[in-house]
Image (tube, rainbow, N blue to C red):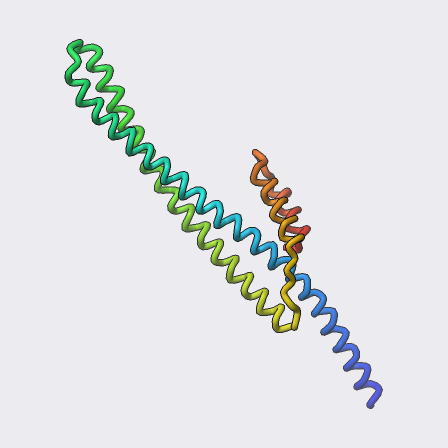
Length: 174
């Protein structure tokens, strides 16, 4: 009876050790989540800055066009006056539509922020699991930089396939 119990305990310890090794692989995933999250936050910030600049430009052009419409009234030639007025009004309409379309950016930012928060939550859960198993957090700057470099490389490519993204994430255990 004692030998069977000993074998069973040994088998149980082996299972625990194997599981612990698998859990250690979560560290790589955690670093990947952190890098991806940094890129999402950067995309949100850059998108918001670009949108604000576009809004500022549209507002300035709108103001100039309205001023031009006032000046058009002083033009003596009716044909030229009509053409200028029509072009200014059409331009104002296009700019107004453009402002409306820029509202879409806010929706995209909100979605990206939700994704970022989800990734942060997953990262925290991974850290809890690692701590439960007594696995210390590695400061693997080399792995983080490697993943960051690959993600930046993808950003600069014009067309990125889902396979490219999947391959990179697989390399980092995600």
